[in-house]
Image (cartoon, rainbow, N blue to C red):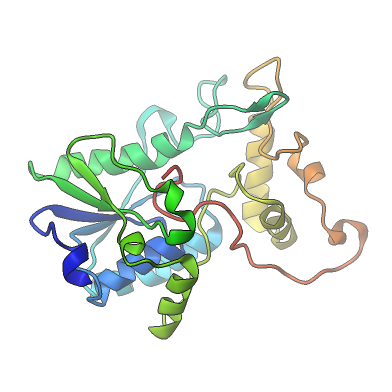
Amino acid sequence: MANEVGRAMKRTIAISLGWGVQSWTLAAMSALGELPRVDVAIHADTTHERSSTYAFAAEWMPWLEAHGVRVVTVVNEARRGTEVVINGNETPLPAYSGTGMIRRQCTNGWKIQPIRRYLQAHRNGQPLELWLGITTDEWQRAKDSDVGYITHRYPLLEMGLSRADCLAWLAAHDLPSPGKSSCVFCPFQNKRAWEEMKRRGGTDWQKAVEADTAIRNVRPPDALYVHPNCLPLEQAVTIPEDYGMSQGSFDLDDAECDSGFCHT
């Protein structure tokens, strides 16, 4: 299987490392020799990931590098690209308005373009193979690259692995699951993920509330929201604790973004 996945070894091979389950599994498989050794694993840091994602990356990046997988973190510094409000009248978020969601620009600006700029600067004229962590349960997200010098590859799909298979592989190799990765204010999060974020509180929830408030009036006359109910986040997300009750904790694994490219 390793020979099949690595058939284009003369290319520069990179992983888009989002630090979610699938991309972490790809990187770990390469590190342990179950997939060919990649040249680099690139994390496009939106600067808005969950605190748990940053903590996991800080703990396990040294392990990857000790096993021969070089990790590079890139950030979009152009055009104030990591801000949720740009020039006072634009947001890259696919926010909700009274007429539906507006166009998503965050994936391209915060993830795709920083990775491409890095690869273009370091490819030395070689074609590039970019591995993305897509599994069989989300096969429809796999798309060809729209630039000629990059070929997208989906090794987990080629091996017929689901997300559950990735979790089983990690457990079998005594490696932890990082949970899903996404921006704390991502409008694609589901009800359960929002509720658990509010329950946990802390900087993640605070940042989500601040982002929701910041985008409210950037495109008048429509107000914008990160929650599909088109209410301020504190009102849109309700948990028993709001009313003096208590409830058990949930896992955040139902959030919607995991691989290096949200759009893929």
